[in-house]
Image (cartoon, rainbow over all chains, first blue to last red; front, side):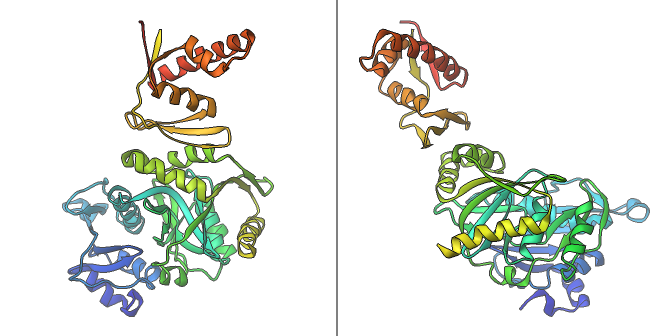
Length: 306
Length: 92
């Protein structure tokens, strides 16, 4: 049973009372909030996610409610609460959905230490995963959004979970966060996709979220074998170019993009070393999205033919 | 001056071709090294050694010019390793 089976009213009611229990990838989450804005966003972007049993084990209990006092009426703010802790400053109430997404990312990246967690998008085709680690502003999410609407499965837009024991990638498909100019570009490029309304003036600028493809959510239990580590970079006017880098250089850059490489100690080192043995490493520059999609298709086809 | 390995043995490293990465469990740091650097650290894992004895070991009977060249290289390498807290020097 998916969230889409609930009417908006039922979802809002459940969200405001004991909380909405849902499954995202390996994690069961309970979100509680009296915000109708959040209910609408969840109804729009999370409709394909399975509902989880309210009496089952829950990995993360989060609450997003407006702050009390005068502020509630003057300039309402929303507070993210995780198991009683307040890891973030309150944000304007219209930022409630981005705050939930950032908060859930924080929950996973600070608690799921049985995985090597990399700040990277990860997508899969023909059974092979491409990990796309990159700093903000590199066009990682824009590229990811285009690829998952052109034959690639979304494993995650933000957090790549690598199982330490065997190097397999564990899916965590959640809405893709697009920023600033890339929102309009992607709305034109994939007009059939579902986007949230824009949220303005966040710490990251204007934000909109893209609903993940239904198939990616249905296949949330299917892990994937990593095959490529690709550091993408959007550069206006740049030609599409995939350049190999050495595994040792790839190792250091990947470790730099990991949330928990150091806390994992020797296990983190071995997990990254295994990834380097399983993958080829590349830098990828692009400016024309159709060419980028073709370059990735060629990579996947190459593996498919082998 | 003898150089002694600070890292515990066995060393945690992996090489691909001429490039290697080495993990220091004490600091949590990872270093990019050439294969020769790893070979030197492996040699030090057998026991403390001076630059002269390391140079003789790696020169493996080659002529004096090569020993002189490798000595210079080892001096730089040991200075780097000491800075990275991978080895420490002791005056005997």
